[in-house]
Image 1 (spheres, rainbow, N blue to C red):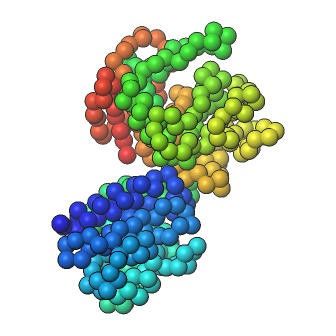
Image 2 (image 1 turned 180 degrees about the vertical axis):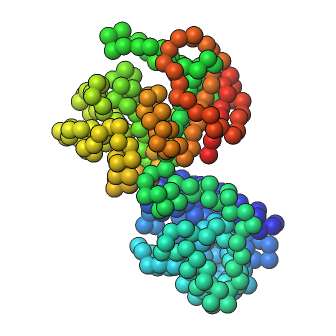
Image 3 (image 1 turned 120 degrees about the horizontal axis):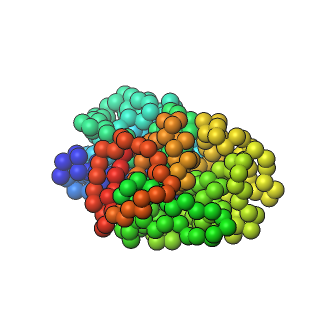
Length: 338
């Protein structure tokens, strides 16, 4: 097997901890001896041993390590945190070669791990194309370089560009069902991979959504309710949520965590979510809130489902014209910008 294939295996391992490692990155490691994998590991959650530690521990015959190659999706750490530096453990076991998917942009590492390994006579090679590894840990990179959560925008729209009918609280009319079964499943898988899910107070009042992961395995994200001047979520609905919510509002909600801020000032309140261990948010609506994120260039990832139905009149979907990928899913068109 080539270096690329072993590095791909690192990503497969790391992906098992998606949504569980904040504020750390997702990392996988593989140890190979004469073309055969003899050890594997991944960072399972914040505070747990790092991937390199798990991989080294899993090798039954430790005498093979000096003649082995360690593959790691991210540069081994070089600083003391909750765990000792991984580069020191690697050099201690005299592993002869290390192949890294990407250099860590975090200022406490950023080449220091590579420098340590090379200073101890270890051959260090980097992947020819770091892009897949950068995309894989995009949330971590944004957290560390932009000091805010990664933002994924997601909505479904009709074939003629509407996200819903025009509805009022008085009619108690349900939201228009646009997406199909597969796209609904993908949405719940996406929810399981983020730490926060953002909706407007209007969406909360009209739909009273549960905001959970029901169609996929995983932990439900923290609901983040953006409260403006017109719509106010009820205390009974807030108390019914599976996960205690965080509110963005001009005044504190008694009994609930509130970031006191103008709901329109996204650039102010979004970074504060990091204080609540929220490193990646999924914004699901409504249209005005989604457009506000687009207007502020907070569109790290955008997913749009376009159904086959047309309704001729309704609430216009957000305007966005930067999609670069299109795939058919059941009766939907799925578009993805990442």
